[in-house]
Length: 72
Image 1 (tube, rainbow, N blue to C red):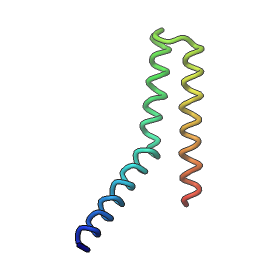
Image 2: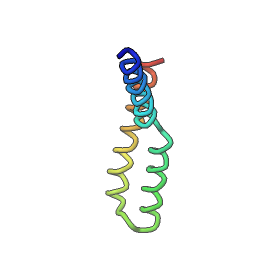
Image 3: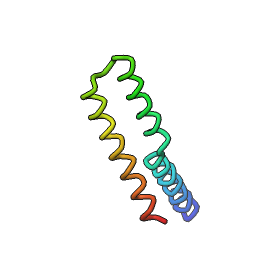
């Protein structure tokens, strides 16, 4: 019984670690930012859409950085 409980606790902790890494991974957002700029430069999105998407991405990056500071 305790082995199952310990195993479930370990699994839950590992899943939480993975989820936190995914949520706080700045590299994915930086890639997304580059992609948006490429779309604009190749005339696939308007300047208006570029600005809108960049603002959203930059807000998410800022939120990640603030969350990391709170944990430190």
